Structures are given as C-alpha cells and as structure tokens.
Length: 318
Image 1 (cartoon, rainbow, N blue to C red):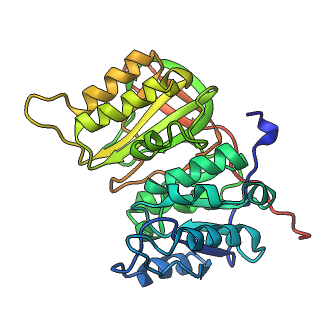
Image 2: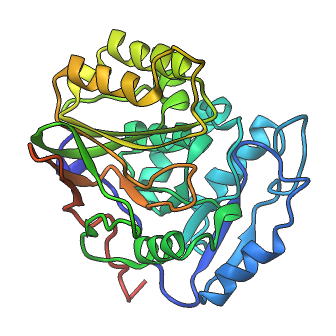
C-alpha cells in the first residue's frame, strides 16, 4: 500500500462531536453516563447512534442496524470522530455491509480495540483508513496513563513519536533487530478469525502488534500457528507484543511468554514484549495504519515509535 493511498481523519478540537457506535455486544448492563461525562469534561459533544443502546440477542442491534450506524456516522458531516462503545463480539459480522468507498471519501478517526480489531482491520485493508486502537467508551477515562494516551491520540496533528511507558514498565527485546513499516494488528483472536477472509491482514511492509485476554497458552499457540500457516508472521517486518491479560496455563504447559517467544524466533523477525496495549489497566492508544519503527536492542532494551502523523488538519474553510 503506497503512502499516497492512505487516508486520515482530522484531529479533534474542543466542541467537536464524537459519534458513539456499538458494532458488537450490547451494553444493556453498563452504566454509560460516567463515560459520556468524561468525554464532555474533555470539551467534546457526543451523539449516540440509533442502535447504540439496543439489544438483539448478544448484539447491540441487528447486523444491518449496526452497520448502518457506522456508515451513517462516516457520512454525517456533523460527526467529527467515531468511538466504539464496547467490544465483546459482533464486529466481524457487519464487515460485508460497510460502504468502504464512501468511508474512504469521508475519513474520520475511528477509535476502539478488542473485538473492534475486525472493524479496524477491514477499514485499513478496504478503505486504507488509519484508525486508533486502545480505547472504548466504557474504558474512558481509565487510568491516568490511559486517559493521557487517549487525549494525545485524538488531538495530535504531529507524529506521536516514541510510545511512552507507565512507571515501572519497560519494553523488552524478544529477538533483537530493527524494523519499520505501517502498524497493523490488535486482538490476536480476532486477527486469527479473519484469516482466509477478504479482510485478513497483509503483512508485507508492516509491523504487527498483538494482544489478547482470557486465553489459555495452548489457544494462543493455536492462533499464532494459524498466523504462521497463512504466512502473516513471515510477511511482517517486526512484532510488538502487548498485554496478554489473564492468559494462563496448566502446570507443566508452556507459558504464554514462551509461546510468543517461539513464534517470534520462528519467524526470525525483530520482536519486543511489554507494550501497555490491550486489556490491562494502562492502555496505549496506537494509530493502526501509521508508519512506525521498532528498535529491539541486543542489551534487552527496546523502543517503539510512531513516525508518521495519523491525522490531517481540517480545512478551516469547510
């Protein structure tokens, strides 16, 4: 994908309106007021999509309703950015209902993570849109680190630079080397489920970031093996491992760290672990589709940086 084909939304300014969509699981049992109030305290207006508070089985509305909400938010010039309410399951079911050409013509920041990985992968592959992975409405404001990351990511007009780390945490080298490329990835379970579909990730010229939650180490192994068998791990330039929260193992089994290390070394690509990205308390907010650089040093230290602006300034005349 050439740099000229990438499309980007605009950084948010005070008074801008964030459209709230629910592409996946319903939020019937979630108190949303504190999260909406946190956005309002940042100076933003919010607009709930028609089906955002609906319930249809375990989804927030039918597939058509959820897809229509997303298409409508991109089409509506009164909406400046789009924030996904929560994750769960369901985003992949609406991918064939999105108007990718229209979305590319009306680019906006879309923010989410977890199950929203499916939506972000499809928007990158089909619309060439840069999205933000790391926050959901229900995770805002979150920890001080997470809140700072969200605020910085949605307002930045310059490259984010080196990803800062919370106190007491550091990136660690898994396999030394340097790599650069466009950032792709997100939730491992979702990425593996997209393999063999029209929305599967293409790894050439890219750095892959991965995270997951609540998966036993043998399941992590199965999904990483799927990414090996379909060629993604061989294609990418480097690998960044985020949080694998509550990913345990039975006594005597390989640990999740051992599994992840095995596949990084099998692929022979520069790799690091320890990025605060995913379902942990501290959440980095990363621009999926932006150009990034990875430096995994032989001494065990590492740095991961976003080298390209993930937004473009809005034309003041419009």
